[in-house]
Image (cartoon, rainbow, N blue to C red; front, side):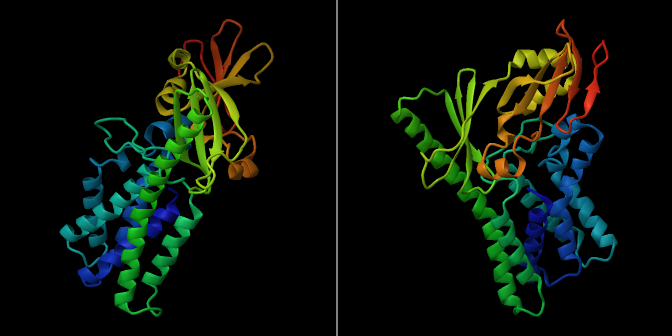
Length: 338
């Protein structure tokens, strides 16, 4: 999720705990920082687009790192004058950090919650990464629970608990809805005698109304949209070809970004792209992040999508360069490399 949602979750966590802890100074700051600080790892993407795939939602989002981050934050705020014991600060920071991990696991990007032991990206996909109604509700409850002059303390605590409950319940409802829609979409295709290997439904912009549907059929992928009220409602369909994993790994020997992309992408596809004269270019992207739904198509159209990379090859098939999703070209030395 984006930072505002995490911040609201942190404030709600603090307000829900405040009556039990005796209203200590520094509680809100600790929870707000703990609920947002794992995303500091996004800075690695400024150095290198490959690092974003490898390390964002990596170690700072890990269950193994959580206690170390929590104790560091607890010690830091106590050193700055917070009225929290180290033990209490540790437990409070752990809860706020856990809210961050929970919300991120509920999105399609996935989270390496077992790093550094495993690079498995866990994703249960009940939320789109930006969900205005969900975030607005959390923010409103956080504001009311925090504002001193509006409500008595007991009602503020109840509002904060309601906000924490909403933070936990909303993604779970999204997961249940996604699972139901996936089953219904499969049934619809079966009733129409349309062949498929697998149907996957994931959140799209303005979920839980719009959902992305990926239908895999051999090397073909069909990407479209569905809504829970009318599973058969017609939406535009993108027809794609699954990327050749062996080719991606071969390219990865010359530029590691393609091997990393093969590891990262859930629905990798390939299609011809434009390149300099005398070259052959292939665009690789992940259908999980396509601008296929009505909202993203209206906002971004055919603009490049996240985790999009174009391989530029010479007449012999050697990788000469690659382009990232910002249009920057990265030459590849004849001996291979980044």
